[in-house]
Length: 347
Ligand code: MTE
Image (cartoon, rainbow, N blue to C red):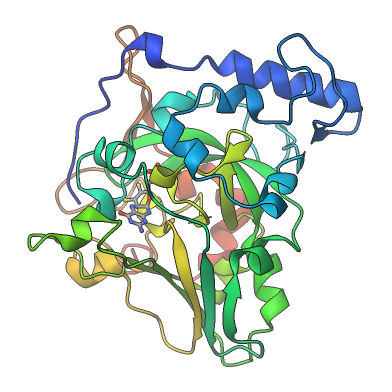
């Protein structure tokens, strides 16, 4: 994986986190339920606004273009707010919205951090379908509506730690992968879940390139118990709004205790398998990137150490270097999955 320096973002471009926090707190207080809901609320600047509108107004226009059908808009009217003291959130400062959507890895759009933001403006996510295949009782090609609509959307505030040693704290919107998996009834032979991203060279410029380093589609996979873990999340939005194309619209995986490359974007296929599936980075450089890719400050990448990270954004006044935690700080919840395994061998 290429290493890039932290982003060079002018402070005036950064959406203040307080805008988001205040809105969430207001919604919570107003409803007294811990549930975000927009209908009928009045507040200066937010009158009659659906949740997300205040943020949407600040979002790049490409994000608005990715907002699809009516059923989808309704989903964002009631999002279960994350309990910041609970297991699915953190009270650490959120990475400002503008950093989350302008500093990305999405190699289908190019290898520079700015490429996904600059080159995904016209990315079409409607219609979208997801194929469910393999060791499962209900295989088929399902419209995104069938995939998402049965689920109540909730917020999760997770740390994202990239193997390149930068990290962010992102408020995602989505639902647990386990809830989706149960609906399609995997058979007893299903030991792993494999995921694939869209292949569409017309829309994804790097897939047209002869110099592309990845053998498309981008592939990822999880062991079944990892996929069923309550932390493992299918995200359809962030910061209370639709998923911007550059962050993996319309639906992506988020596995917070693993390096970011496991969190595959723009998913079109979910396949249940008996054997460990091939994954893009370990196909390319198996000595550098393993199947498990658990965040581990004791097991270093062959070309760089993993015991420190830079929490973005890096500013003039804070270098923001912090120690990396085992399993990205989620050890209490996930360490039991790897009991008895040599994590320097299964990296
Ligand atoms: N998914 C696809 N399809 N293509 C990619 O290049 N990059 C991965 C992951 N998912 C990638 C992907 C990497 S390396 C990281 S660190 C995260 O997405 C970055 O997610 P973000 O851009 O939303 O922060």
